[in-house]
Image 1 (spheres, rainbow, N blue to C red):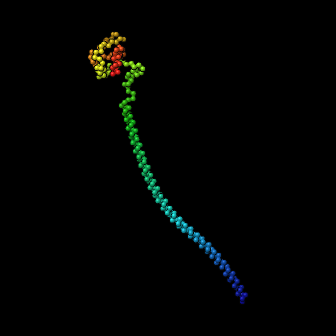
Image 2: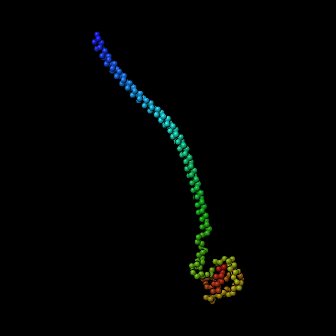
Image 3: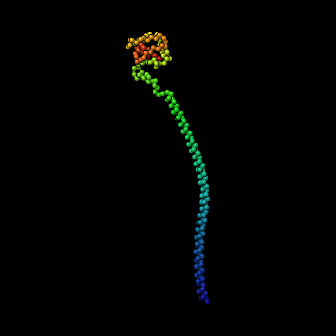
Length: 202
């Protein structure tokens, strides 16, 4: 009987040992899993804190983006104002230049650079020795002739032509009388030349 009981108890003991070993290995696995769960929980906490930080940083980025949009709008407005100011400045400069050019144009018409009346007696300037030519009676206005005659002596006398003795004498009995001979016909005497020089210098 005892032998039979011992034979029957052996497999039960072996199964108990295996169960104990399994329990021990299970406990070890539980410890490992517990440690892993602790690590996972710590990571979750870090992720939660990181999520909060990310949310806060995201809010800051949104605020910064809003500020940047406002600054961009202000810069665009300032650029538009600057463009308008530059346009107004260009318009004023254009108006000033056009006015200056118009004034120069009118002054050039009013005072010509090369007046034709300066070339009438150009022979007086071309020679180093100044020679006075006797002008035509038609080239001298009547008022100028009266003034010139009034400034001359009352009784000049007789002006004779030495080159052509056949020419009649020109006597001036009245102040303001016409006594001019054409230059192409005859040449004046030295006395008349001196008189003409005095008249031209006056």
